[in-house]
Image 1 (cartoon, rainbow, N blue to C red):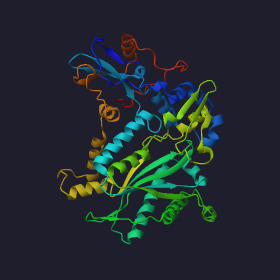
Image 2: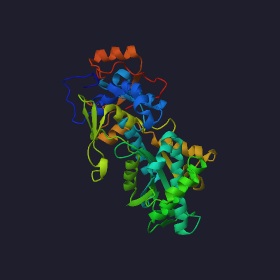
Image 3: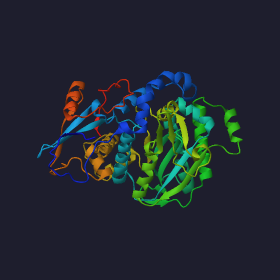
Image 4: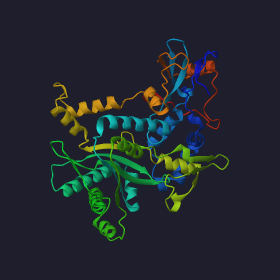
Length: 441
């Protein structure tokens, strides 16, 4: 379906042309549009015991997602200055870990910023920390603990580095990524860390790490997690002693992946920050109201080895379980890559202006400006087509207005002869959160 407002049919269009994405055709959108209201009604009866109380952020995020990219929920109008060609661009929901499109944009923005501004040209290593099933329930019911779990991973890495080099004046650069989804979308809190394969001295000299003792690293991480949970009065000494007596502790620290270049480090980082759900792995049986999911790990054993089928309500319960709380920080910079550390180095190098007193706040502002790539640049980066160049004359296209009022939207879409984009079973339109800042897709 074209989102064009006015087109001269006599003009010849180039091969690579911007087209509106069609989220309404995805399995995820159809499942939520048709069954989310039933999910809300049956949640307490079917899922509250296993998934905990329904969090307010779930309802809000899903309704925003159902508006994402749908022209009936608002759009921006773009027009060519030269020939008058114009088209509509749907507004985005900016939801994390649910909307594949908006999450992909966050991934690309982070990758661009990390490759250009953050990562040093030294070898990096991926380290993955996991915890036993017995302890995961605490992190499901208190999502704030996920941030403290990431802190446990960093403290274990920092202590391991000091033990390895036998000195306190060396610091590694690390980026932590909080993840909650397992291979079959089960709740599986774990921490991915992209860390320099060595550390930096105060004069900037980099010292390489020749080997990793993951057993020792796992031991340090386990001690940090036990200390955290005991301080929160979530477990006692008897539980710790019992778990220490297990043949396999359930904790793990995997540091087997090493990369040499910044480009490879960015690729690993994108893998860590990816959306939990891959649309291409979903298939939909509308008649039986079932969703089939193919896990990423093709060689894994057990339930994740092959296709997994759920009824649509359980599928919704699983995907919404990974929606982060408002303001929850999923990516954290530590050590040499910490904002304060980077700002201090810039100040010492004389690159900051003398009137910038708050180096941490300034560094954060610089980072935000570097990350803030436009919709057009994202489209160009992914699809190698510039949506702000006219399809027909090659002229410059400008965003001329944002349309968010229902009556105006209907009039324009009727003039465009654009049919409804929302599935018929969707009984009513979810509320458009007009107090939320939308941006063009």
